[in-house]
Image (cartoon, rainbow, N blue to C red):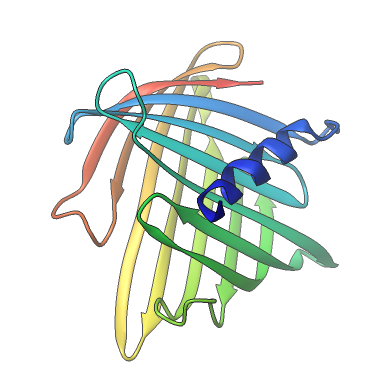
Length: 194
């Protein structure tokens, strides 16, 4: 049942009434390194964000990973929140955090700090997210998480470049690196925003 929590949370958030600032996207990519498909469903608004990744090597998806967070605005770009991470073969964890977000023209930046997490295995985390709308329908977004525990720093992150093909349909190229991967992974695919 606990592995269903991220799925239930994301479905519940998708089922809530949309507001003007809400956004949704569905991204399908092919991982060129591991020859697998990844289907990512995302939803966000001013106070919540969630994603659900489904992984598979053929037409079926064998594993799932998701994150969901909720925040309360504290004013002047600051917020306090909680984030859930979990999925197949991953120990569920919850992180409280303080965040700061800012839009600088076409660039959006979000920085969060989590002093503790529920498993007591990953340690503190500093997370940095940035996105930019570039000319000619190009876009760039990236995130990096820096975990710190017992004097050890662990980096993980992802960068995605996009090109708008038609209204709300994008070609995407993604690179990612996680601690359990020997080298960076590269993916190509398409994103539909709705």
